[in-house]
Image (cartoon, rainbow, N blue to C red; front, side, top):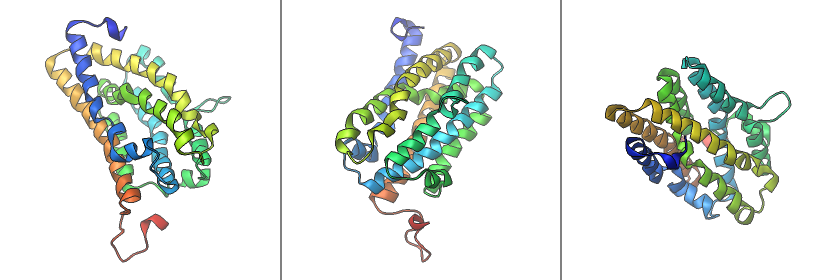
Length: 248
């Protein structure tokens, strides 16, 4: 289905989904600082380390969706998302690309894989997303993926901005963003078509908008945690008598 050929109710519904792009995390103060080249090395590394937790949970989330979906035609296409992240026996996937991004930012992969830099708020938000997809009808799980509608812009921003604004980052480490440009556009078309097909009543479409808003809140709250920890210098337990959480 071509998006620009939609008419009537489906076009109106899609326009409502697209209107939520104003709440995408590209507008969060932390991400605006990143876009403007205002993050220091520690802050960029913190973002990479925390987003790694999100990256490794995406194929688990997608596996939960597949387990809930009785439609083999959907499963065949959706399976590609897991392959994109996990890779195959001969090709690396997005998780490996993210580890290489970490290395390009002077983070060794053992540190990333240990997840000791993952903030509790980030972990809670990401786990809430995985749990939602596990427990929801598969169509609602698909709907929660539609933040991908807004993702190509954010990937292109990083490819355009980072070489100039963060020259200390090895550009070879940006392959994740290059790969996701095409993958995200493909995934968006499939996901939107499913949502337009299954969410047809006013009540169902209202529910779809609620789900997309929930996912936007997940992404926004992840950056809230990072802004507190890395910009306001308020990592978890910063005001207690114990050792600083950031040093763990």
